[in-house]
Picture 1 (cartoon, rainbow, N blue to C red):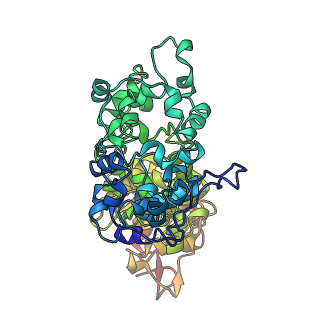
Picture 2: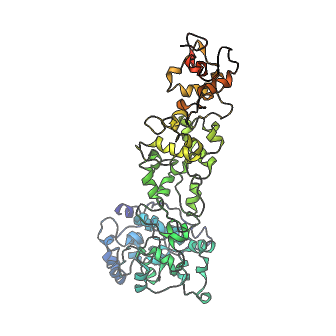
Picture 3: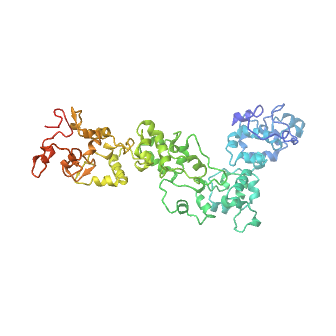
Length: 535
């Protein structure tokens, strides 16, 4: 602060200010600039010879410490060098800050209050547009001490200590608020009191009576902010009493993924009353999503997708929920894709990562991909890390779409589905399933010999049945009422389907040993020794 005042007479902090009086075509007030020739008295007592009342008020105000700080020149810190003025007592030889143009006055105040100007309680651009000057609200020689700002009070507390001042007083400083209200659903609040029948008084309907705020020179503790006050939701419901926060927005359904990190959401978290849209950080969208969807981040942080829950993730939630930025800027009014029920959108979101990793390569050309089965039809979006029953859950999902196959697995002779190490995905990689027709015998054989290695081959004398449907020519792969998962109750019926031209000595009369083909032809899958598959 001391250093700031020492620079007042040289070059002060540059600010982006409105045009000066000359640039606006207005005659500049008659007062000399702060930076000028002349010496400093550095003696407030000399000023008191003529300005005793002003000095006494100054000593009782918030700037009294200036008189006690060496190097700040006392009164001359704001009024400029006073030696010539004291000798000749000419008003034109001393600076009056209230007569400076806006640019010079703000530079003068910024010497000590640069941060306060940048972090002003109200939009600084509004005050400039309204032509407000620092000295319009801040009276440096006023003995009344400036009340420090405090937390925003509730409307009830505000009503006890203040009275309405009317929208004209509010909008004399907050110019842009009027423009925003005129464009939004709350424009009816700007109607004059004479046109009102509902008793609501414009700005003060939401912010409470404003006389205390005005008397405290715009202090934040003198007005209510529904977006920060404890009773902010109740303020909104004073006009929207017919809207239940949950029933209206969610049609009676629970919203388990809605909630802020603090545990509660306010109406103003989504509804921008004085803004055209909610502010969103597009470089780190997760920070915006977290403000409303904290429960989702808690779930995601424990899942295999926990990396996407990082607040600094450049894509984060938007990787799986297209339209998230538009949804956030509209305060939730614009829909966001949840991926469920939209197979192509869901597939594109999942494959963006998992196809590149190779986990779902081939899915687009698989039966599931061509049938537009959504990834979420089989996969949970955020499965918990370390859960062990993944394959069993997949089996249940397979049954939900393939009830006929599920029935085969309930037959007396079946593959051991559900037992350790054997699941639907053991034979049917879900993202690489080949078309059902035509059947590839090589593909079937490759699947079967993973477990039935004794039939692997290659054989010197292979069974030609493998050139057709492969193993499926004789066996039902999922389950059968016949032993060995055969398609018919008797093996001979399968043989005769292809070998109807039996040799004449193959007597087929009842009791003949030739009625059971497997009596002689033991190596039916292929033989290394005999073309007729003998032992």
